[in-house]
Length: 373
Image (tube, rainbow, N blue to C red; front, side, top):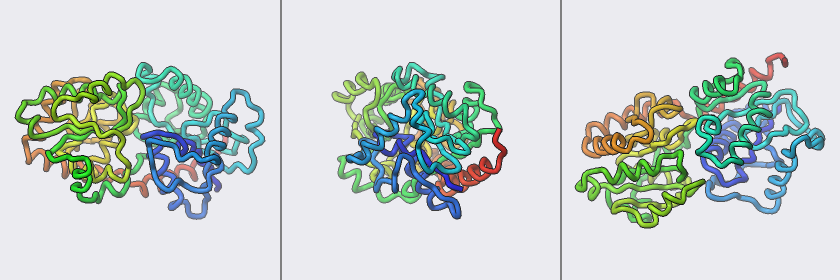
């Protein structure tokens, strides 16, 4: 079987989707066996490293992005001329006119935030995502959902039959399971105190303003002992938070974008990882924190509660007082930190890329043997 994977997201600045695609494709290439994996558009191999902040685009990559945009033009008849398509074309997010219709079309379901929380996205992003859903997700012979929560949302909102959707968890980079010592990263960023850590894009859906309010509600003695460190790119509608971070309260440190290679060490050095997002299709920082043995605080609902599976402290999204109480409880109890660390490491074993790739190849082979409707 020849499987074509849409890897356009690797050519763009991105966070969660780019992370998923980079490691998923790498694991698929190792797991494919007699089957072949090719990358669209015209990628010979994966980029050398994973950089969320920028695109690796040289002249050739700019042509590839132009090609995707050209093929996505509505009713573009030239998309049918694309040569040498495989048995399966797997769409990841960006392509909406599949080139030269393959025998089978599959796709990934990440989340349904553009339906559930449309105000948390740019209008053009909502339009593009809904177009992707109608042209790709709803027309696919099979879909991979990255959580059971995302799968159920797709069934309820998009009316995709449940038997067409397989839930296959992503994996976590191996460095989080065996993180390096934190001291070099802490020294590089002058992190001399214990710290709570937030990792993620700075945007309204992630609950960063709630986190800042929760931290300022901690008792002064605790704040003087334990900093709040935020690591991530500034995203859409982040101006208000950026203003607060430009002149932060005492103890708040904003590091900006931290390279993927430094995140395991930054994570393992934290007193707790705090991820108070309103909604996630999976929530990589939560799984990464658990893999590193760090206590995690995250939100009830969406996939976050599913990923946590009893191994994290859960709070109501948007409730700064409850979040503050959870942060204080972890900081003040070594016993609680130890319990959450042990449960988190055990739960994180469910998020291995080798397992994800094996189940994905089983999915492709099962869809490939399914009669076309």
